[in-house]
Length: 392
Image 1: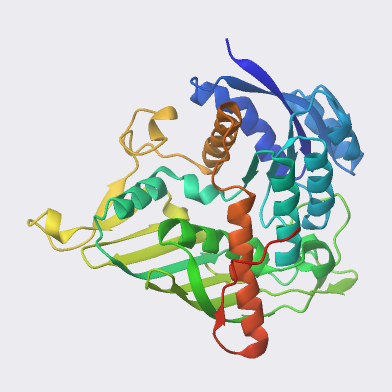
Image 2 (image 1 turned 60 degrees about the vertical axis):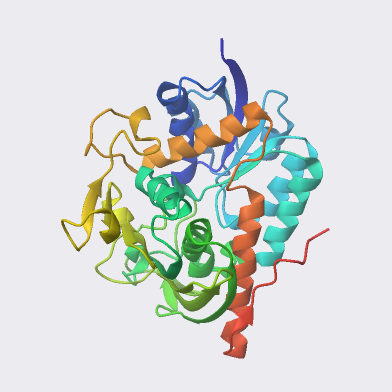
């Protein structure tokens, strides 16, 4: 019989809600899991949110004080979906209490904060997980498998991007995501973190980068605390200053010699959520786009002499994790399903007593690349990625 493991969720906005319902689903899709999450307590500084979440998802308790989540003896996993400015303090407290930690990206507000977070968890020897959820799509896992098997030959080119126009309307409210004090980095932390993580998972570590940034919308309407999300639009009233970047673009060189471009923007028009990548190798190529996450364009001309062009592959039970959701080829998965897979891998790692990927070590690797990109904004030159310095 499966054992239970107590979960406390801090931050009951969109991400906290997603995590809560996905914990409830994980055992349904992965019956091999011997740890079943038990929702103990949820916390949000807006009391109405935590009360609603308790009733909606069946938490045993709710609070407006996140410290009560850490102190609760029944909580073994602390799930952090709070604003970035709270991550360091919460992680340090959870690690000191010996709790396993799931933290949404970008983990720290800046590379140094991410390094401090990684060190706190490593020193406490607790298991960690980071919400780089796009890597769990069945066809992304399949693409990685093909590359690891050498089916694309030597990788020569990688183009990664995340274009999400959630802030394309200048009347989108000034949520914490647009404020350096609360969020830290803007698009570099929010969207580019996914792009970098995916690139390093697919191709390997980034050796050096040259980058630029831009803030296209300098002011936005002030938001109402505890109301809406970063998708909320509001006309009229007071405005505040945007203090971090809307856009980041970068040329990169990977350690294995592959060349790449990485780009992210939150104010672009037309594209809604294009988290995408294209890979070219000496023997083939492929590309994937989250807006069509159940499709993969695959080019392997040496394996099939009946065509010389891309073939569209549909997600099916032969691809990693698809069968846990349905047995039908072409019957696709959705965003929440990726979070279920993510939760499964975290819980399985705890069950086995092993550290999963991506954990805080991978988040720190992403932060090292972000630091090089930031340095390049000032120097206007190529910057080497420093993977050696370690916080202590």
